[in-house]
Length: 306
Image (cartoon, rainbow, N blue to C red; front, top):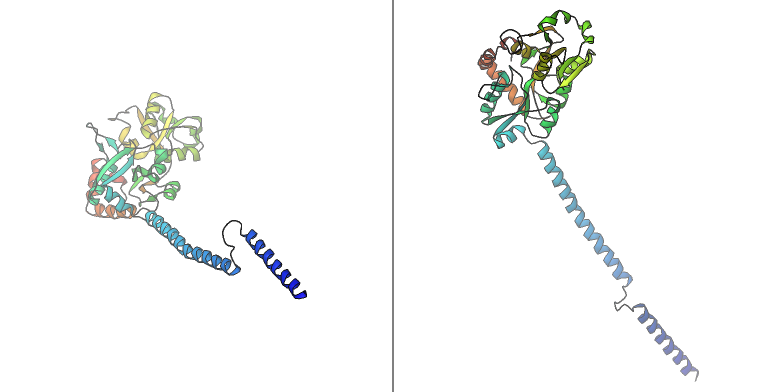
């Protein structure tokens, strides 16, 4: 009898254990054993480890592509599109239009010759001088070639050529007022028109001269001719070509020079076109073609030996 009671208790315990296990698996899925759980974790870890190198390779490929684009040759870019786009303003004798509307001038003719040496055409685009760096970086133009003074600001934001032309900033006034503009110390009582972003504006700021920025140096001359400004500060090469007897501003003259400076051509920072143009300057100076163009526009005395 004692043995039967013990057997019955064992059967009852087995049945309760079976029910309990069935209750734990009520979702219909068999419960995972400890060994199954460990295997699943190992599988997930293996998948993540195999995906990690692929992700790293993809990121490296994107980085390499970006670096390749950043170091791409500007010379190849210009040759690829077949056009050298030159940013300019109306600035005689460097860049200005003839009677037919074609851009001419010392800088314009040199730019045409340089483009031809590259096997591309040239396109001239009038720009707001104060936005020249933005125009370059946005690739709306490929260079700034317009009697640009090599200031620290310019050389710090562009890839510039060496100097090719000497210049200075001079004061332009009505002939009748010339005697009043002979000393720097006497200038603070007058209002000057200057091109915004130009070397002339920098001189006005450094000398603490009252001034009004205008869009272009040609506009500064018009301000003086109209009497809305007492005087203007412009490039000496422009003053020599545009004011005085036999010019459109016969009643204006230029007086004192404010500084000495040099012109260069600016490209996008890091551009290999600057070195190419330096080579072209050397070749054109040595074969006489640079001086021939300079004589055509009366700037031969300002040319820097290459």
